[in-house]
Length: 261
Image 1 (cartoon, rainbow, N blue to C red):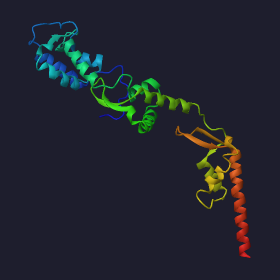
Image 2 (image 1 turned 30 degrees about the vertical axis):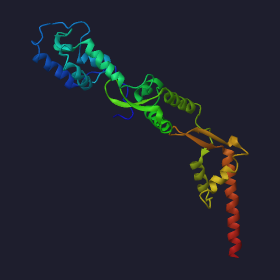
Image 3 (image 1 turned 180 degrees about the horizontal axis):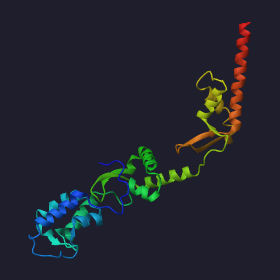
Image 4 (image 1 turned 45 degrees about the vertical axis):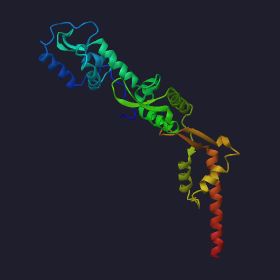
């Protein structure tokens, strides 16, 4: 089974070489078997089925084989519109295969990752990560089903697709941080670069947090370089935190000097 579905198919899709070669081989071997030339209306070759319906050739052959055992009249060798002899399949057989695939398919409105990519026009990998994060919290919104090509892949409910779209719309609201704003890692580098080493690992977190209630405007989420939302700190907060550690360092140095006397 394919976990994330297929990437969108090209409009210029062509059958695999073995499909084409088997078509030609069968054309030569079976040329004289059926006494008719043109196929009845609606009859199609395997190549035609692949192009029109997206059937996987092996999937179609496997399902069709169950019906052809008792209804061999549903297939025959005819001369195609391009003047090539090849095996054709009746509209009745094609409809039977379509219905069986539909019965094993996803519910109406459910989409796989390739379809979500086409719908939302977002980065495929970011879509996949967002979908998996949401699916972890809402496992009932995803299920494996058979696509029109006969492959079993994962589909997502309209509810989950809407949540994926909403998640990206929320991200769009956030811009890059203004000049001078820093995130926690950058603030740590500033403090350490000033030789103001916190005595405990949580000292920096506590110092930052001490201003959160009084100045909530100093704390804002912005889009980081990796495309994730990160909390950034206002330059005034950076100065305040730095002053805290400057004062602590001065007191610590003074205490050491007194102890040395």
